[in-house]
Length: 322
Ligand code: NAD
Ligand code: UDP
Ligand code: UDP
Image (cartoon, rainbow, N blue to C red; front, top):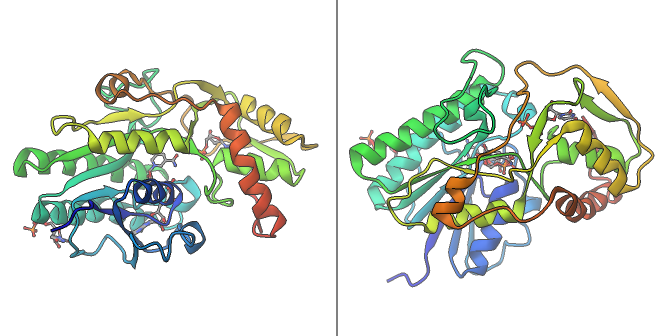
């Protein structure tokens, strides 16, 4: 008999997955981390290797997986535009075939399964802020579609397994999240700006910088994901998880320059195709159903993130800045 919960984290060597693994090990769970290292690294989890509750398996979830667990967090998927556009077909396969395999695994085991969905299911939203009932404005054939439509199809599969097989499913729609261990070269805006500021290089603002995002610190996000997994069976989601305080990208650039104490200048580059103009979660559902809300401000979160990138820079581990 297993006294500890056995938890599978797909994408466990990535940014969110590695923080989640740490949290669940602290709670006394046994953690099986499955990752194909497409964007994740051993560096993110090397401090967990050797922990008696931690196991690592190199595997691509687009292929079937036979293991024995009680809960599944399905996080595997490249998350930044630069990464998910590198091999778009593989991105869709990871989302769609990966969801089918993980749902098949959950069905065989009677395990609870949580999907890391995304605010990208709302596309370039015409409703602001975005509530879970909004169906989105997504281009089906654009450069972001492999990610957006893959995640939308995964949500469909989760709800069909719930309706058809009565599986216990949970869907989190994650909004922009940042913190230590975001990949330094994947072009995500908070880490890119911090690295550029630390190196006193130009801060590359896309477009006019008036587009907005709402940024959530990683510790808050992990709290939200764990609370969702632990919520009663009838709470399936989708539930928005994010910090509702909205900033323009230009405001973020100035904040980072200020907190790093950098000499960087702001330069303007072209806006990528299909780049959403605005994004802010409506978070009442998470508050009501999970008793959760983000508590770390952007200023505080950026302060907590800077030392991680300082250490990468000082070790020469940041070769290229987008
Ligand atoms: P990440 O790139 O750091 O982590 C993803 C992990 O999945 C990596 O370790 C990667 O190697 C692994 N992976 C990719 N394809 C795989 C496959 N086929 N099989 C096994 N492993 C695979 O990204 P992250 O920011 O930690 O994102 C984790 C999840 O959260 C993703 O599903 C992402 O879509 C979702 N999400 C993240 C954010 C955010 O702002 N960080 C926002 C919305 C949604
Ligand atoms: N699957 C898996 N691990 C399991 C059980 C199933 O990876 O422990 C995969 C299996 O390859 C299958 C998919 O999950 O293709 C969907 O499983 P399901 O039982 O829903 O469908 P079926 O096997 O009938 O196609
Ligand atoms: N962005 C930017 N400069 C950069 C990287 C990103 O101005 O060096 C912008 C990007 O165009 C988008 C916003 O910042 O408008 C957030 O980008 P990110 O890739 O982090 O997240 P997403 O677009 O997926 O929300």
